[in-house]
Length: 313
Image (cartoon, rainbow, N blue to C red; front, side, top):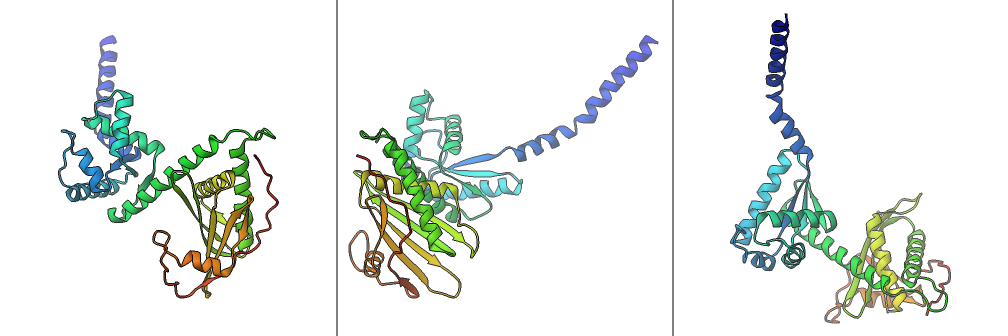
């Protein structure tokens, strides 16, 4: 009886073992599809050339490299996998390896760095689009993130107001958020494209925001774009630098309208129609006139009804 029971037990174990074996690869493939992938991309020839100094880097032609990356992305998409493309910067990679004590000339280190930048850096989700369309978007997001990080550091370094003790950067961000919301509320319905620019000691900061507002309800905007825009505007407020905002509004069956403001004493002061025209139709680098766009109306800025600003010294 004991022998018979043991035989049944062993048989049962044998059956379960072989019954699950065929499903093992299938389950692993399912798990693989649900595990996200990240591809670090060298977007230009200069970055590609910098990586060629590593012996284990297997490519010697940037065009061929991009072709292989696109093939990999398409293969991953065909398997139903979610793939993220991250901007691979060779200088940041070398610094990362030095700080982490890693050998930079290994595929494992490149893979680890790619995972790190995917978690904190600029990325684009791959949905089957052409790589030539992905690269400008990826670069744009990287520039946006660098601008936001730099502007955030500037605000954080300002410290507290000597008179009232309030954090100057925090107060400037709150003021910028108030101005932005008043601007969007006053702009009315339509698709809005806003640009904020302000000079700093080391760079010209630029933030862009796209929103849409129906005839009823508030404006719809990307929260990260809104935070970036408000941060750059806050820098102009906190440093009392000559910042400016341009608003372009598109609506069905009507020409695009462009309005402009300058930042003065913590608020947005409307520009005249002539000032808006000159600002929009002048090349920022050369100062040469630029032909106005057909079907665009250059209008004075309007009063956004913002509350008076508190001054900090």
